[in-house]
Length: 574
Ligand code: FES
Image (cartoon, rainbow, N blue to C red; front, side):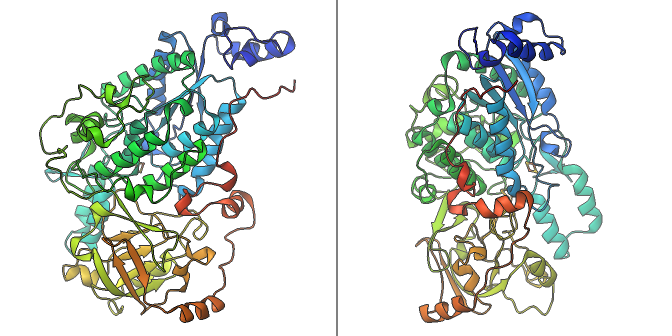
């Protein structure tokens, strides 16, 4: 194999002589490229998760055009290619089931093709971590451009937020506080433009967290999808990725343990989604950077909640952008972060935000006057969750932070949904609602069902929150005293599988404990009687998933995907 050009990886294809070089170049010429594109310039793969089945990513073809503009401008050769896409609102049984599959698609597409650097285009919840996970395992120069949030939802003169108001309105209808007509009217007012959820749900969280990791241009996470500046940042990303290839600024040279510590702290300060935990653990695993569940508690303990966005607060992403966006938060956090950490700009985190403005005092608060002193995630341990469970502190009702209550246990979400509206259900405000067998292997795919609906008879009495426990996840747009990611999950015989209706459960968030008041002898007896549930399927991808998925405390990645395969030029078989 002969390579020409200046030694970029793509020269292993386009720089070849003989029949291989002929083949690699000739077929590309059918797209009308002039010969100069093969002169050894950096080839930039634009990994696009555009799909009409992923409404949050439906505008990414246009974003890709701006990235291409920047790549051409900087002397690179842009080539856009599709990746799998995961639309949160349509895919069943759970997009999380397919996050690892999409990451494999991204990894292998990058490895198999003449790509020197990549711009990753994502938006909806799982598309962002999946692309970063795949790219991390290849370790090329990589830069992400997220599609940006939708404009604020508007209904009856007020703002309504993606997801958050769906849960609220749905409870209002069940409690008789909202008419069906209004509910349908609100449906038309929530999603007003291109873009992903505009609450601080998982998509906005992951966009901010990836910016905090240093993998997205500063300030770009919050730009609304339809704002012209979204396209400016995309063009600048195209320019910058070409320079990154020339500087050999691979992902592993940008992201370190210190970057993850920044991301964990930023996630706390923005009131970010609990889903960031499984995604950051999985990304760290791909980069072989040590990060564990307890880091999300200990690293964020002294970080206050600065950002007043739904579901923890009142505002939405559009307001966040106008108030200064993530750079204002990072600048305000100051020494709580590693300001010397590297970023894709070639400058440090601190240098990137040195002059970042903060406008107004409502949306982004100061460390001196935060929205809440305690933010971040509490990691719980106890005889219900020896490998940990999590709870989002900013979403907890104060009166439930220490709670003892009788468990009401359901083995499936379907059973829960069938029975929860029953007026004769034996439940009161102190009951602890439990749904299990909804973890990574159990569902399978660890769905977002953890924010269990409250019984209508209690809603009518004015009850607004109850302790809820599951081995599932919850939407980043949700709220409440909701214990999630219980590990080990019930389906692999975790203690949650041994809990019975009527057992007393104790939650103590300040002490970080979650226990059931059941003696060891009784638990041993119940374990003897317990049998694992049958596998969901015996074939295909779901079989691969259930056989290889790791538990939530390890990021729910596949055991065989931890680490990376690198970007070596594969052998050629023509
Ligand atoms: Fe796509 Fe919320 S549904 S980001």
